[in-house]
Length: 367
Image (cartoon, rainbow, N blue to C red; front, side, top):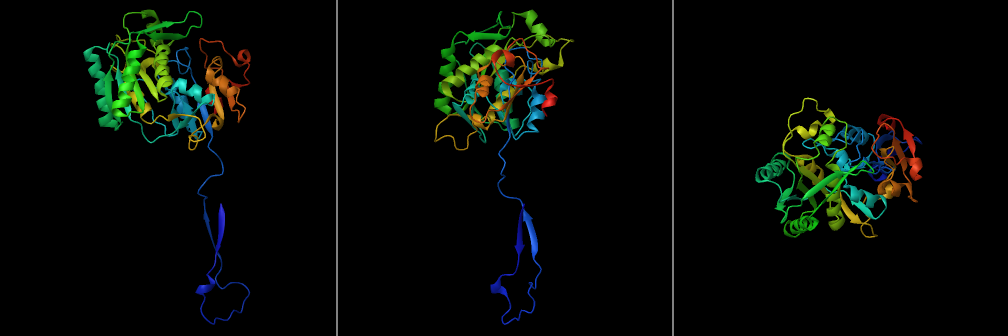
């Protein structure tokens, strides 16, 4: 608070007035105002729930969103990734949350990239040519709805010249989901075409996933007991695009609707609402921060790893590149918080990987 004493200026005093008292004829008035700039920098927190590891919270269909919403209400800036914020046809806009793809988040953590907040991105849509015509139309209608009802800048779409042929499986050693696409070059050509033709700066990818395999794994997941079989290869797809083009990217799978299940777990229910998981992806990408390779010219206005004050993640998921980079930071090392209630299929605890962390039992103990 700044205090200003307001007195009449000498030049405005009446001529030839005789001053008979030592104190001013007009009592001083006091006005207060808040400084234009705060002297405290923003508190920035990173929330990580790695993809496809069966996390108790964040391993299903946007079920970490309530935690992210609460966390965003007590920090100035929340940095997190699509696995936390995506909920198929549901999403929740948070003005102080940054939607950062996982590969980019790792590069950010190690200090190679900075995050540049934006007002809005131009989003391009890549559709796998392996998607059947009816299902393709459904996804194009999502893009139309996003433009007409939400005002999102989805500017153009392109279909890959070759089916991507997405394959998915559970790693028998780690228990996490993973996979590959047989034709990655087809995806990269499609992205390049959008960049050249429409000057997009964010990419949504929809790949066709098979419907007829892994029935037991799918049933377990829908009941809230298994690992998300799709998530691992979804990360592979977005990592490929972000690594090649250094722009925001997220993936939505194209699937035929599943049979009705009366025993559906609420944590998986967001994926049962319709024909597509694309709405949350388009919403997230529309204002995702841009990725800037760190140098002296681009740092102005960017959020850097040294700005991060805390990192929150599952207690047994400390083996990833991002958290290890934060833990080794020599400049403004953040507080690293391990959440014990958020168990996964992994076993990379802070002690086992040599990371100093504060362990808490529940997410609510963070706030």
